[in-house]
Structures are given as structure tokens and as C-alpha cells.
Image (spheres, rainbow, N blue to C red):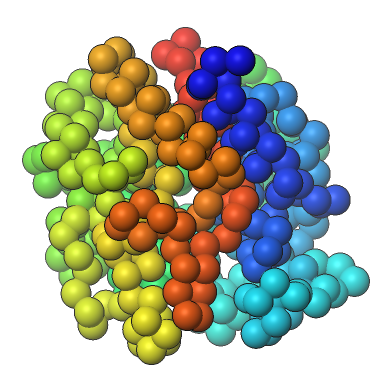
Length: 373
């Protein structure tokens, strides 16, 4: 078996260890809940290897808990949050319980809704059409300046105080409309044209609010916040939003910021006052802030390079990724700057980690003739 094939086998095994009755959990040790962002990003990899059924089960789970106003939970908790859970001894409810607000108390979180709708389009599940339309009506109420407007810490990077028009949220929102438009064209072309107009409007707003002439900024609140966020920028390329000149500019910034086997989550560092106090109290203020390394940026970077036909760089990054996987023999959540799995007094990296496993499989399988999943 070739080295890339060995790495893919390890990665697929890591992903499948996170399959459960209702879908894909974030991880089997302490991330044992059904997180929409973890599970659905992992689902890109599941679909790439033909594991469609587990993704369909997850769709059904999240739609089952859709609120009357259209919002879909961002997390379905399989058990309470306890110290024992983070020590590897979780307790479980008889049925998953939905969470719509950050930590149950904060702002409503939107990516459970956008990602559920995205995968409904990818799997072409017509049985959920009424629920899709209800969710779209809800999402429009959460727009400002032509884009989704998030509350503090209501995205993947949920330890950093950022709010407003976020790149993470809105690149998913744009792609959701892109895939919905493509799917519905075969059975409702009038609706599809409406969805295309909305998609194009979102693309215009993304550029007017977030494009800084070199890359898409991390977010825009009272002003544009020009942190470089490779994950969101590379998704914009891989999913087909960017023009060739925009793609080349983003990839040049990625190449300059490469570190160890991946790219930093953001550059420069977010200032200390933007980091959640509890994270700083537990000496985890660098968890999603440049210092700690993650798989998500490099996986999407590889897909972006493939989209732009950067053959030499694709080969180099693929070797980078497979070498790391073969060394670790599993997919860890995150790493210290020296490349070792994160291990602190209060926290150690989850493994295997579904999100990273799925994205790596997707990026390794990505080709320019794919169907854009």
C-alpha cells in the first residue's frame, strides 16, 4: 500500500470511530456531542468515501429539533457538561438535547442551520423542502449589511470575542445558496433563479464588506477586521467563490504563513482582551489563536491549491499531510507549535477528531471535476 493510501486508511478509520446511531460526533473522548459544525464538516469526508447514510441520519436528527421559527440547533448534547466528561468519563441522556444558543445562554448560533441546509442540498433530500423554506425565512431575519450578523463567539472560533459579519459564517451561507440553487434547478427553476440572485447578492456583500484587496478579512463589526483567516479564505477558493486573481492573492498569503505541517488559524494574534476570560484562566488562551495548530487550515489549503491546479504545491502539501498522519497514526484535534498533540494541565487534544478526519479525506479526494462538495 502506498504512503498516501496508508494515510487515507488511518484517516478513514479515525472518522468512522466517530460514527454513532444518529450521526457523527465530534470525538469519542470528551467531544461526545453532535455538533453541527464538527459533524457536517466531517460529512464532506464521509460523502467522499460513500458513507452517505450516516450523513442522512444526521440530517434527520437536526431537522427533528428545528424550532418553530426555523432555527436548527448548532449542538445536540448527548449528556451533561461535567468535569468527568473532560476526563473521559461522560454521562449520557436517554435522547440528545438541542442547544440553540452559545453555551445555552448566549447569542443564537447560526451554523447549525446553514450547514444542515447545505447538506440537504448535497444529498438532494426533497422530504425536507418545507423545513428548508422555514429556515431560509429565519436566516434572512439575521442579516445586516447583506450578510449574516453573528453575536459574540457564535462561530467555530468560540473563545474569541468577535461579532458582526463573519467570514466563517458567510462563506458557508453563500455556499449553501449556491448548492440549493444548483439542486432546485432540476425541479423548480423559478425558485432556483431566486436562490441564484440571493447567492450573487451575498457574493457582492462579501466583497464589499470583507475583501481588503488581498484576502477576505476575518470579520466586520464597526470596521473591517483585517486578520488573515486561512480556513475561510481557502473555502472561498475551493467552493468556487473567488476570481482567479483573488485566489492567487489568497494562496500567496497562505504560502507565506505556512508553519510546521499546517497554517496558523489566524494572523496576527488576536489581542488578549478578545480571548474569553475562562480560557485565559485555564491557560488555554492560545487554543484558537495562532499559537495552537489545527488541521482545518491545511486541509482546505490543499483543496484550494487543487482548485487552482497548482500541481507542484499540491504534491508538496499532500506529502506534508500524509507524513504527519503516518507519524501520529491517528487524527488529533490540535497541536503545540512543535507539532506534538496538545496536552495541558486542564485539557488535552481530542483523538480521533471527526472534523479534521473528514476534511482531510475530502481534500485528498478533491479534484477540479468534482461536483463541488
